[in-house]
Amino acid sequence: IAGITQAPTSQILAAGRRMTLRCTQDMRHNAMYWYRQDLGLGLRLIHYSNTAGTTGKGEVPDGYSVSRANTDDFPLTLASAVPSQTSVYFCASSDGTGGPDTQYFGPGTRLTVL
Amino acid sequence: GQNIDQPTEMTATEGAIVQINCTYQTSGFNGLFWYQQHAGEAPTFLSYNVLDGLEEKGRFSSFLSRSKGYSYLLLKELQMKDSASYLCAVRDSNYQLIWGAGTKLIIKP
Image (cartoon, rainbow over the protein chains, first blue to last red):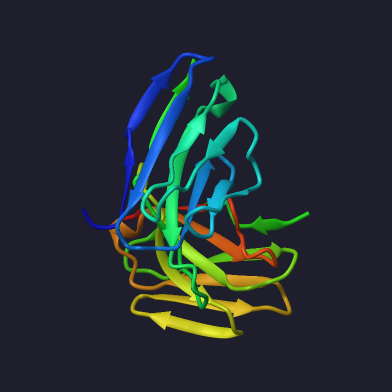
């Protein structure tokens, strides 16, 4: 694989269920990010990780958790899904070593919570 | 609060030139990015500005004025494949990207 992959591509979930969105990158990037994208709003940062073993809260972290056990993987978990978490979720990564530190995005997961 | 403003939608003709503006108010400034996003796809990186002036990359150019909190993306020789949303994002003092809602560009033959 090359770049960032996300799974699943799409999912319909009943409210109250637990769900983990997967994200894997093979670019050996230090930093990884989770965003949600909703119509009429800009991308909003949920959680981020500057390096393996560390995580931080973004603009909209409530109801979500992340872990970064290794460089490549950055799963996002919804402990108990609610309809307001219906969105498109994008994972991104960057090398995290200064300069532009451009973020590169995965293909996204379209999540519907009913 | 932090704010990035872009027009919601613009229409242009194939072969023409279009300028998409972005104004920002953020806590600190550590660079401005433009991304392209086709419908149903991921954002892809177009350009980065950290100093005032124009950065040219083929048919696309991006301009920055830090004193005015203003940037624009200039697309020349428009092609139908340029129909997409264009996202402006500013890196703030916490080194996080703050995103505009995007400008949907419609290209007509």
